[in-house]
Length: 307
Image (tube, rainbow, N blue to C red):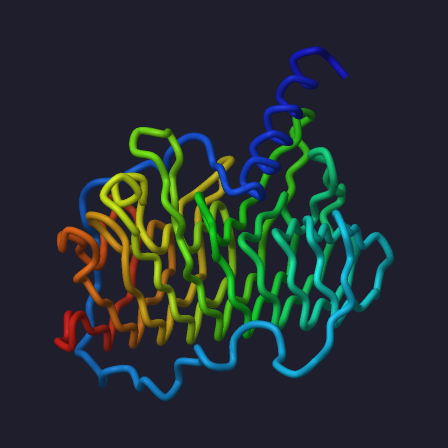
């Protein structure tokens, strides 16, 4: 491997490690213009579908304590009923994680910036609690009934594709995020260079984001200035966002905007936006870039239809 290739791999490793530590360098790109297709509103989303009381570790179930990091390397392994003081790394196929609390979680990612090639498939998390989840590629990633983001000073859930220095592509396809609570944003110093989101998808193809409570509210003006939006989707490494359904979520917080939905075949249905975030200036949806397509119906902001 050449020196330049080694350097680029090191930069990738550092960025993912920093994300799991709650610090994300750089900022998300903004896109102008608009190209939106709208349909008539259907109905306001029902609050009964929100699952705040059910998200997170299971009450009344004892969890074994694990000190430091924990790495899953065996295909088909299940991990349940543990509390991990460090990071949980998933580097195996067909892994199920249930009723686990960890400081952070890395998918298709290992200690010291390592990652798996080819990417691992079928990583399922349910009833977990963690400050943040990040990946280095991976397919069929499912996160349900979990509570994510407490104490986070960056992005709570960041799922992205990657490209190796030798041009090997690491996809991030088939993502399912349902019935999660994403909240607990901590204070971020103003002008720190950190960008913050509840969910950030980069180059993801085929995803469902449904029935989540996304409460990404800044605790102070300095933090407010570092938030890109609550939900951000953008192309990455030459691959655009495609085939993503954003349905029946309750979305609160943000900064000037609450969602960046760049991509092809994005569907936004029956979501509830609350725009009275800090300083009261947030708008639900950032204008789309030329070529992006967004199908909208049944969305509400502050109790009023916006489609």
